[in-house]
Image (cartoon, rainbow, N blue to C red; front, side, top):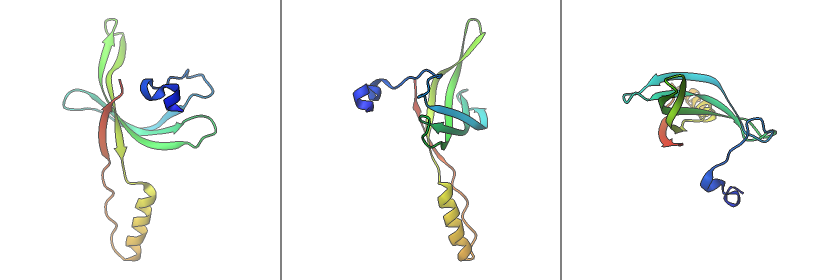
Length: 122
C-alpha cells in the first residue's frame, strides 16, 4: 500500500485532527541534554498507535537536533533533526534470563545499555 500511494518516496502526512491520524504521546521524557557539538538530545519513551483500534506500542526514542530561531528569536524551531534507531533488550527477555539465573542460584547479569544509531528525518 505504501508503494502504490507513493509514501515510500514522499512519506505520509496527516491532519492531526483526522480520525485516522496516528497517535503519538510522550508520557516519559528521561533527559534533555546538549552534546559536544551543541545539539539538543532528547531521550524518552513514546506510546504510538498507528490508527484507532490498533495496539499501542511503547518504544524508547532519542532525538538529536540543532535549535534555530526566526523573527529575531521570537520563534524557536528544531533544525536538522535526527531520530535514533534504538535497540534494547526486551523486558520479557530480561525477566526470563533473570529467572533462569535465579534457578541456578547465580546473580543475573546487568541489563546491557541500549544501542543508538541516528539518521536524519529532514
